[in-house]
Image 1 (tube, rainbow, N blue to C red):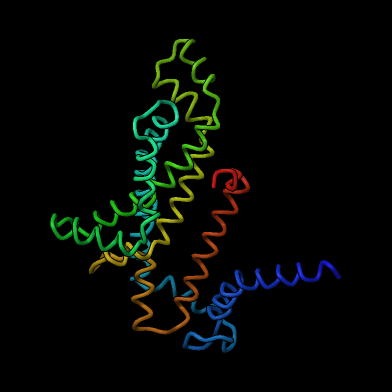
Image 2 (cartoon, one colour):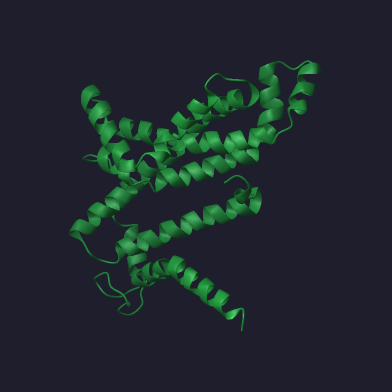
Length: 258
């Protein structure tokens, strides 16, 4: 009897978290022509239709480019920064960490508006370039924080031993440090990829004709069409994200880094 309240609370919590996802899946399986719950019959036709919509295919390519390219660029910047802040006494290191974290502290709408007003409009750079820079900046805090945590847990005497045995500093980093923190680097990449791919507020301000990320294209599609294809695409993206996270947890112990 004493356990009943705990089970009730757990059940309500799971229903709150998983319930919307189950509703979206049910709506995506509807045989009807409008987005509704409960579904009007069962059919997979909307899952099939998702792959026939040209705008979804184009915006998926844009989102993949931004997620992969932006995350790799953020790691290229974040790994040296993390190494410097964990291995050396950098003046103002805490201020640097705060500045680097600002893209995830400041609301995305403000970041998007600021980039549009003070970067895109004055310089006239293309929307794709602006999106790439924005997504890189948004992912950089995750790269720095996760990689820094991995480096702080790495014993410094391993690197020192490599230096004593004749390695240069660069060789010690590439042959000792990076191989030993590859789990953290991969975790940072996965976290950055998922964050970038699902980004909405900043992308909303920096999207333009012919250049849209997939989440923004889904919003635009729903303004004209109200069929279950958006629910089907949402379900597919949710399964993709869940699969990536489960694989990362299985092979990397993802929860150790985030």
